[in-house]
Image (cartoon, rainbow over all chains, first blue to last red; front, top):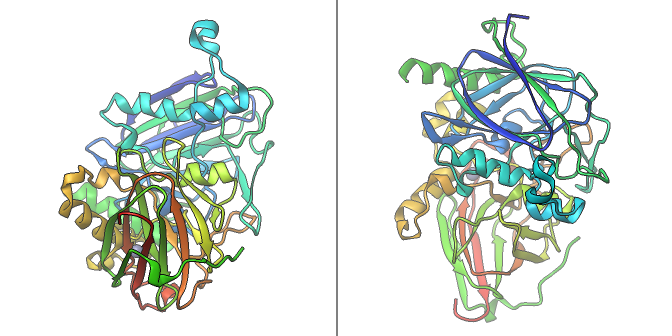
Length: 238
Length: 215
Ligand SMILES: [Zn+2]
């Protein structure tokens, strides 16, 4: 593992955003277990290029995200690759909590009464962070929910797995192009917890080792080789 | 669950056939009933809904499946907007299951899914982009192309997290019908996909019908 360049902790129920350069590795660590990190990706050079969950799933014939998977933009390119994962299953279809969902499930807590212990929701968190880059409600899409697992029965019914991620579990993202990242640590929308879950997440930046021919993401399926070839063309012609 | 409609085609106030590879952009008013017919079977109707009065409010696949706690659409499914409002409710369906996770095909995703040289083949997002460009009075652009419904498509998910594009459960003449809960702008790409065995590499027409006042 290369040198740690930066690390910090995001408390549960908060939001943040940043532009990450191609070639950096982002590790997310579930500090106490049961974390959820909602995340969306955009191309900072063309904000119309954004994360596309349907393409990500169907290109890799998968419903879950884990090591070996690439996260695709709607332009057939890869924002980042999952190069390591101790969790095994991350959700990208269930979306976010909204103000209404949080109020219905966990009640209303105002900022005036509770200060930073109020109960933020994922939807508003993305609107706030996206607004810093000129993005609005037109630009939101199905997000990743790191550390969260939702299984689907034959009839399509969904069940949230409360024990999916343990304290110390991590996922490593290698960025394959410059990427605007919006994220929040609000609860997964299907989390059945009685109290608003507030799980902290540690994040760390390192330099990613260069991709080699035996790379797990490159070789996971022929689709990923073609997606990463689209990245190569993008970086060739700009 | 299968449920047939009680409405007669002869009583519809609007009927149109859309060939494969074309788009359809039309208003459906609150209270009107809207039917999409899979004329020859195993076609995909890639459908987007916008609130006609505020088109930045639009169909949300993730809110819809979260609220109904089910990944498939069928009779009784309420189609939710990005603001959590009901846009339409499916009231009749002779197919049994519709997909809202697979999204629309695009030339760029075709390069990944099939082969790099497929980037010149017509795809659903091209139809969406042309529709929005030709109707720019709505002020909608690529920004507004969200995750659509694929009516008539069957995309089963397994308990261990697999995803497959299965042969259709649809067939000639099967249909899905819904009642609009708000004034809607409906944008359909009748999928031109020539690379997917689901439609036997043969995209075919769909028919659209509307019942109610003022179509
Ligand atoms: Zn298509």
